[in-house]
Every structure is written in C-alpha cells, then in structure tokens.
Length: 119
Image (cartoon, rainbow, N blue to C red; front, side, top):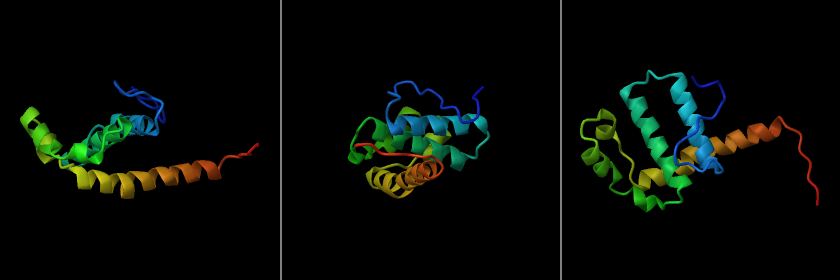
C-alpha cells in the first residue's frame, strides 16, 4: 500500500534526478487510483516512457519507432496497441506539458517556503 505523497521506488531509476522523482509521483498516483480507462492507461504509459527517456538522457529521436516496437513485443496488450509516442510527440509533451507542470510545482514550493541566499 502506498502512503499518500510518498514516492514509489522505480526499479532501474537512480533516484537522484527530477525525472525519477516525477516518475515515482506518477507511480504513486497510479497506485492510489488503479481503475483508469484505457485512454488514461495509455497516457500514463506514455508519461512513464517519456520520463524514462529524460531520466536516461536519451535523445527524443530514440523514441522514433518505439510504438511499433512495443506493439511487436507486447502484441496481447491493449495499452501498447494504442501507445503513440514518437520523437515529435515526446519533445512536445516534455516541453509544453511536463516542463510546465514541474515549473509550476517548483514555483508553488518556493512560494510557500522561506529561502535565503548566502554568498
């Protein structure tokens, strides 16, 4: 059972990068509400894959053709049959989706905390 607001350890992730922390947050959210529609499960899978690309420092071009590969590897899975994450979509979602989300999270956390800078 996952405690609320507790990151879930993801095998193979270093745990030191923001992407692995974000992936843990997605996993925690997934564990809290396991009954997602097929579309929502596909979107979660695409986010997992994109965060893996970012965490592993892969280029966005490495996502080219991955949807077809997943369909071949996991032919019996309905999520992979709907999975659509190529290089252009990966880049777009990272820049205009995930980046904006994490910048807002950072701004919110800074707003509620007291910080001082030393030289």
